[in-house]
View 1 (tube, rainbow, N blue to C red):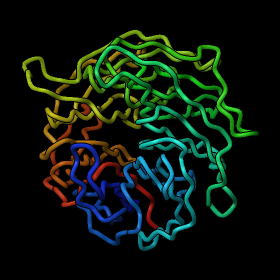
View 2: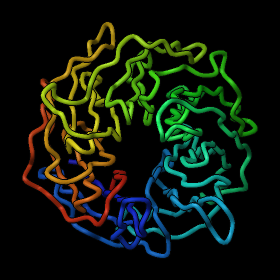
View 3: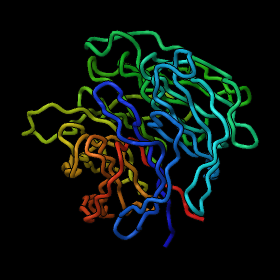
View 4: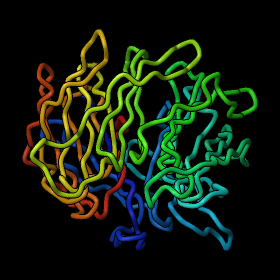
Length: 364
């Protein structure tokens, strides 16, 4: 059985209503049977490394420092590290300013040569070249989103993520402030984001699109509305990258009347199920995916045994799900039924300070 390390991005300082309790980026060894995490190390001297991303060969790790100011300048930063897959330690390489405030999401292209960053508060996206040693060069592109929508949190753009298509031709950036998913065509020779033939798709006013995932068949795509507590289903044109919405479905049980907001979304590796985290209801919502249409059927919502589940990770085999409970400082583990998609707690609930993002790395 393959052994994995888990890296946890965290909040180390107070950010809005979140009281950061962590010291940096934590590394753990994963028990593949129970989902329990054994702590290996902590990488300090980094503030609010909230979101993490890895290069395709898992040699380098990149962390978004969710800050409004870095080294006296307005904006956050992204840090680059070399990964020791034997002991889970990280070796600092360098850092670059993100030219925008509160960077909250990172992704790499399939070649591992370019890093893409979404700046939440200032509503922009930026591209960095990755050099031969894994360090980051100066930015190659910067795009400022422009627009607003109807809710109090939507007076300005808020780029919440940027996700690349499997064929490395397009990038999708859900913008919570604009109620749009911005679509870019990639110029990977120069590290540029160009408007796609469909430059954006509008989503329901006041919904606030947040994260995005593409089905393994590449024809279906999904995005969660943070404010609206919905998952949107799209048919995706592989040739031009365009999106056509065909469904919107709630992530919450019909009898729930409290306040909640979605956070993360992932399609299961087998393409049969989709999961989305609910902060407030404090659960992972499960859906069955219709293989012919891509539409979703709500299966239920499993408690995360903690408060405010932020991001979550599914191991590559598709047998374990790890949910990061940000406000109760824990990671809960679940077995995934391969036939039904049902989540069953393994009994493992590991203390992890203010966890935000979890990334799995194959151990050496």
